[in-house]
Length: 89
Image (cartoon, rainbow, N blue to C red; front, side, top):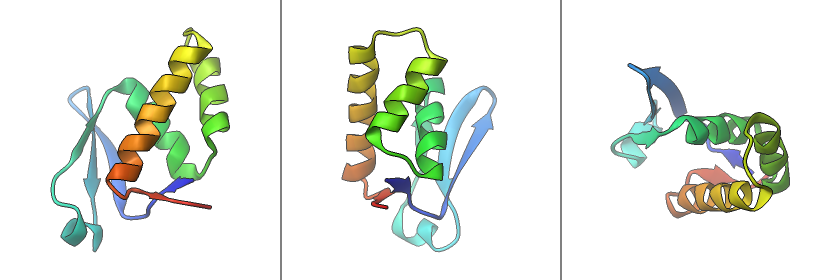
């Protein structure tokens, strides 16, 4: 899976926001607010990844139980899918 083209992640005053650019601004009105973990997941998904790769990378980055990371990754993926932000590889 991969984040669709046309979205940019920016850090503004310590907060992470994703905004649509170019033609995506016509299809997606607004912006997405992410916490640090969400921004971490976003960057991984933007390059193309699988669910399991996201979990493995998050376990390397964060000191959290594997079940908790898996739940967070699943929730993140569900939100992206429900907003049509993912493309399958």
